[in-house]
Image (cartoon, rainbow, N blue to C red; front, side, top):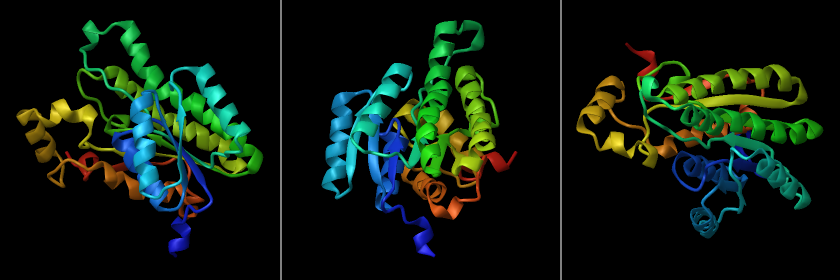
Length: 254
């Protein structure tokens, strides 16, 4: 049974993986046997992540590009092609947050959040799928959010982008399942990450998260690893177009 989750011989590209949720999922995939291509835009932080994961015994390399730069994305895939690196698993994790009431929100900030969180997943997913389709195999895992289902005030562009991730995942499944590509998504709950640090440090918000979540705590980044490995593995070969929430039960209760 454990062979269903064995990723030996597979290669995974995880965007935004020099730290946070992306790094945790990359480590989980690596522990299951996958070779890892880490991605980020900060060269120093990316190099540090490669060194640390390499020192832990994992097969890892870097592909540095801005996920909002279509030309850079295409060049990155062309470079991987030239190096003989075939991406079997793609995790579209890169994302940003921006908090501002809609009445005060500039269009440029709207576009920046949507481009980073949603459009990038389409472009990178398209480039990966073009290559996966030639081999008749691929796993795409998009990272959604609780806001793929529910809204909160002051994060409208993030909410719209993550709602779009849910439907992008279904669109990918509709078009690519017959090509041997499964596309699914993970919706993390409130996680202990750098992006959430201001909320974690806010006693009122911290108490709200713990009170609203049946598990009565924030999630840890490493708690996404199991779901990520499942969706990347043969265990999910007939699963496509789904979003799995890893949220301590938050989305299930009033």
